[in-house]
Structures are given as C-alpha cells and as structure tokens.
Length: 112
Length: 477
Image (cartoon, rainbow over all chains, first blue to last red; front, top):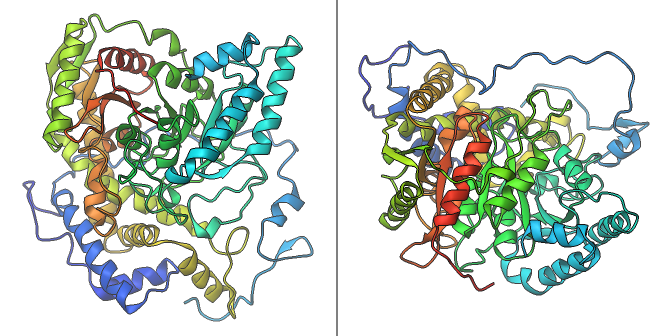
C-alpha cells in the first residue's frame, strides 16, 4: 500500500475516473450505455469515488484486510445422494430449454 | 393487534387463523392502493395456510408460536412457485423452485405469509424508489418515502396490514425504513439467521431480520428465525438464547455508550430524541456515558466500495441463461449484454460498475483492499468501545422521512442515509431501531441500539427499555 504518511484528503483516489474508464467498466460488466448515460454515470461515480478519497488517503498498512465478519471455514457434508431441486421445475424457469438443457444462442467469436 | 396477541388468540381458539387472515387481506385490498407496500398478495396461499393452522388447533396439535400471524415478506426471499422479483425487471415473473429457510421456519411456526413486499431493486437504495414496479409511500405521510431498501415490509407493518414483516439489512435496509415508518426493525449478528434463499446482494454483509410494531413482537419473530441451517455455510453453529423473555427486564446497571459519532451528522430534531432516550435510560437505571468512536466516519466510504464490489460479482449470475429475463441477440455474449442492459435499473448499474471498477487491475489496492482495512479499523474500534460499555446508542437515520423524489438524482445524498447503520454491517454485529417520538415535522424518529456480536439478548433488553420510555405516539392508519 502506498500513500501519504498522514491521514488527509486528496483530490481523488488514484486518478480521476474518466469517461473511457466508465465505458471500459460497463463493458466488463456486460452493460451497454448510451452517450448520455456515460456522461451521467461518470459524474455520479466520480462523486462516490471522491467521497472515498479520504479513506484511500489513510495509512492503514499496519492493518490486515477483513473480507468477512466471521472466521470462515470450509463446511463439508458427507458425500451421499440426497434429494435436490426438481429438474423440471428448475428448467421451467429458464428462458429457453432443449432436451433438458439450457438453450443459448451461438457462443463464439471474441467476448465483447 | 400485535403478533403475540394474535398468536395467543389463535392458539387458544378465541380467534381462527382464517378470520385473522381475511381481515388482513381485506385491509390490504382496501388501503394498499395508496401505500403500495405489496408487490404480490398471496391470498390463496395465505388462506390455505390459515386453514391448516386452524386444523392443528382443532386437532389439539401445537400450531406454533406464530400461530395465524400474518407476515409480510420482502421480495428478495425465495418462495417456491411464487414470483420473487427483487424489485427488478430482470427477475420479473421468476418463480423460485424452493423456499428460503426463513420462509420454512415461518410456516413451521404457524405464521401466514400474506404477500411479497416492495423494495429497492436488489436491495440497493434507501427509499424504495429504485423498485422497477414503482415506489412505496410512507403510511405516516404519503408524500414521503418509507425508507429502504425494505420499505415495503416496513410500510406493511406501519400501515397495520401485518403485525410482522421480514426484511434484509446490508447497510441499514431494515433499520432505516423502520425508523422512517415508526416501527421496530432489527438486524441480527451475521450468521444468526440463515441466508439460504435470500437473493444475494453483498454476501459478507447481508442479514435477514424482523420488523414489528413492538420490541416484544420483533423478539418473538427473531427467536423463530435464529436457527442453525446446514444450507448456509456461514450459518453459526450456536444455540441462540431466547430474547423475548428479556424485553421487559429493564436496564439496571447496563453500561450504555452514548455515541456522538452516530448523532452529530443528524438533524437537530433527530439528535434531540436520541439524547432524550439516553436520559430516559439513565433514569431507568442504566449507566450512560458518552463514548467517542471516530473510526465510524470512514465506514460509509468503505461500505460503498465493499458492497458494490460484492454485488458486481453476485449479480454476474443474471445472464439470461437459467432464469429471468432474456433479450435475444445473434450470439450469447450479445444476448448477455442486451439482457443486463434492459433488465437492470440505473442504481444497480451504478453499483455494478462501481464494484467492477474497484476490483479492476490498478484500482484494487487503492479502493477494495483499502476498504477491507477500514473494515478491520471499524471492527477494532467497536472492540475498544465494548471494553468500557455494554451497548452503544445513536440515531438510526440522519433525518425523518424525506419527500418522494428528493434524492433520486443524487446518489451520494441517498447513500448518506446509511451513515449510522453501516458500522454494524461492516462488523457483523446486531443492532435495532426503536421508535422514539417524532421530529419537528411530526414524523417518526428511530433511536438505534448497537450491541456486540451474539449479544441479541442484551440488545432486545435495552431496546425494550427504550420503547418503555418512548413518548406515546398515536398514528392514524
């Protein structure tokens, strides 16, 4: 973790969020944005990230990160057959089904 | 009529569950048009459940501690064969193939699920205005929001439709609407109540909890829900001691930490009610001292990195393949994109993008890892505070209910609603909002009691004392 020694405010975190960042992130999240939405979300997300700048500027390198409020451990159960969800009921919720499988359009080419 | 009264009347055969159910259904039919607490009323399911309860009573079998009590379920709790939307177009029409564990526990306890309630889409919001199906109005003032994200369940209890409701609380989504609607809302310790069948928002923060008109009724419902569940790997393997019996135990000798860091950012009328509650607890025998926890100020920023980061991962499952909406396109990737673009509302898109950004290469350390360290900082601050006090006392929400439309275009202003509730989510601790008088506008104020992990008995004990000291407020339904 790099950062100022003393807690304090910076203009922003690691650089101001750009329009291009928003377009890139939307693409990663599989969302399409209109030009107007790119402008709106860029401004709104900057406000949230600016608010986080006071936290980004704290020197907390002495603290371990916490991912979870509990000490999480693997939970295992005996590997025995038991009832599971009803297949017909599960497939009934799918938008498209063929031969007991989820049907999707062609998968191919580059990811967007 | 409160939940304990209804259950006692049904258990002793003074009233039938069917009669109670018909009354509740009639009230919803007559009055929910103006409140819009419910997205779906389960009239047939409720009637058949009530009939089964009555049959148990007639047959001399124990109908359970919630016999015949109508309950409102937030629409992110899975109900088998019954639409569960999470307030989102992307799940419109989805019928889950299983019941959430809490729904099974309610049924086993004799409760009658009356309907599914409105919510901010995927529980992201503080006003219930982010629902794809239109907002819920505050039953105390219909020009005001009910709070959120569990605004529908809070409103259902406040309007008197059901004595009990279930919500989920990731950053305050039970406690804040409870405060704004003038009811009791409680978030248990993380892991006390099974999350199996709760549609995930931020898995390390989400927790299901009760709404009720009184602390005792909330304790009754909490006691039914707090069970180990093998279907949830984060469910605690601990017995949960009953809380209902301590609600009237008083606070003699209890050390209450009045926390200015949970008050100073609030409106003066809200702050005044918290100080009055502290004085009342002192008069009831508690040892009240002011205690500073300045680290809480960093909680909001950390939360609005951590929760979106977890949400961006959890909501990747809405891809148009297995359930919910699909918008067709020439290939799978384009279908995926078209489905998500059409199915998610603006706030959900904002949070997914924020979380994706905070987790992306180059920003992970500065935002996400840093927010996780703040989480440690907040947990250590709680630990320090609880060496000198038993519970903390503060406000639940910074203001009383605000006008519909007031904050929808300003996400940061909306997020500030959660400033007093977030620390307990970051630490996984229990906390409760208890109505305590009204603000200058005559609308309800909620006082928040916070307790260490697993200290629900103490939490309900102090909450009961706050309630006993609160000014009487009569609301016209």
